[in-house]
Length: 120
Image 1 (cartoon, rainbow, N blue to C red):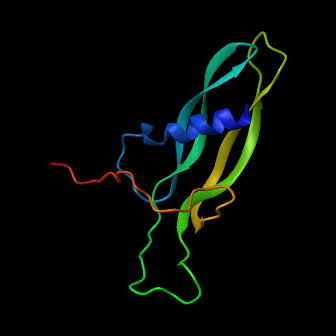
Image 2: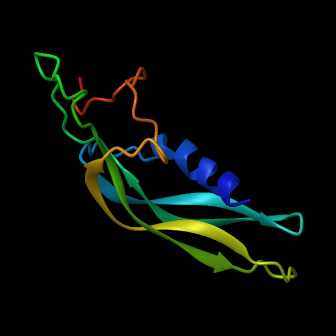
């Protein structure tokens, strides 16, 4: 269940319309389910890009360290009315650019679209 909630949070990354590219804490609404009942709750997550510049040469020590927007996470428990089983959901406490850890994040090349703050 914890994995489903985290996947939902990550899927909602693009939900914030404001143009703020740096790594920051943002509020999102996510669905949580227990006993067949679904409720929407507010939580926080880390969102944004960290500055990274590729080196013009290949280092003999390996790849350059990549940073990602991450932070300190904790889990809170919510009880849905009429259900005795609690639901754990993630809450980001603060955000910062940290070295990418391949054990809990994808550290490869980003092939998606990076939004721009330029408006026409």
